[in-house]
Image (spheres, rainbow, N blue to C red):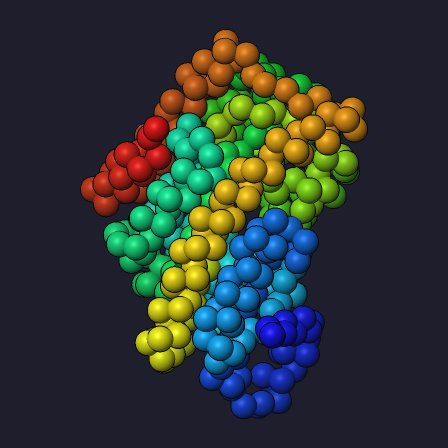
Amino acid sequence: MLKFKRSMMPALACAIMLGAGPAKAETLRLGDFQSTTHIVSVEGTTRWMKAVEEATKGEITFEHFPSEQATKAAALLDAVNHGILDAALIGTIYHGESLPMNSVVGLPGFYGSAVTGTAALQAMLADGPLREELLESGVVPIFGFVLPPYQVLAKKRLGGPADWSNLNIRTAGSTQAMTARSLGAVGVSIPGPEVYTAVETGRLDGILFPLASVPGYNLQEVVTHISRNGSFGGYSFVMVVHRDRFEGLPEAVRTAMLEAGKDVAAHVAKAQDDSIEDLAGKWTGQGIDVYEFTEDELAAQRSAMADVSADWLTRIGRGEETAKAVLEQYRMLTSD
């Protein structure tokens, strides 16, 4: 039966500094930034580790460092590249400089569910610029999935752009910051684990966040209004393994990791979508205003955000043909 070791980073760092030998070939050190109760961990990371252990009959086990125990969310890719970790579930938007094309998922107005967005991401990670970026960064993408479309959470009801003017809104990465700006707000990039305190202390006026992830950070405790039918961009997670480490594993093990990844990607996407209805009901019962934008508000938002994709091509993609091809493929794969 799979046994996860959850130790703190100082012990790991100490072992490395003391010159301890490398981890056994069958043990992978895996880090992420979600708590073990977060839906992404329960239905994604932990499920994948168990599936790999079972498929390899114990040939592969994991030493798991959740909740930023190994390093901060924005440093996970570096941790893998520097040998602190063998694998990590990274939020690609936190690595915009290394993975600019992967930030396409942050654009507003595309996929309407995690299932649709995940199918598109998996296709783009199998072949093309998104995959090449990761390989060039020293890691192999095993599987990827997205969060449900971002909604807005705040202490007042936000509708059309006039309601957003000059508000400090939490965003995830530069692409989503463009979305906030297009609505008249100021995008403030803060990792998920730090958002609760930022809202509580008044540093943030609102949050762009996927509803399925709200309970993982208890954000429902610090807001009074939550939208349901907005489309303020997305967020992608990718499970990566150090390229040399992965290529050094037996072929059967590599195959098992990839096959388990396909199943888990589809599973965690559906689990997130399915959770939203129950969450909305619970929040309403707690006195939170869980609301839908009116057609006029949606039209005003779409109009305001219309240029975000063009801005992404210019600022992130630098107008290059690769960026244009990525955007067109993403648009095609996420269209209903």
